[in-house]
Length: 129
Image (cartoon, rainbow, N blue to C red; front, side, top):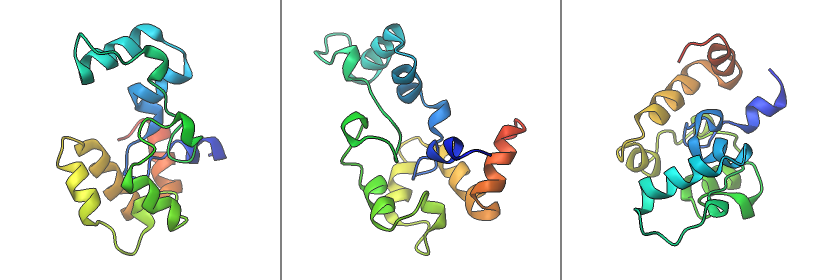
């Protein structure tokens, strides 16, 4: 597993390589960016496709979809790649986030905690969620 795979691990358990915002930004897929805008903000939004950017939790903050994300900032302050590495895992911030429909992030983070980030990435590479 190369370092680039670790960069794609979201602090909360999301995996950037499967995130529509991250992927549409990286591929400059304007059509997908417009779909994301409609899905989040509705048909009459003034958000522009070029505003749909994210470079992941360890990427450039000026490109992050949510640069004020408390979960990401907490992990950065604690110098952690992922919340699953934290002694306070899972915390209220994570539980609240997961409860808003992010069950895959929860599942990933729990699996990361169980087996470690390297083994979790290897498992993903084999096509197992």
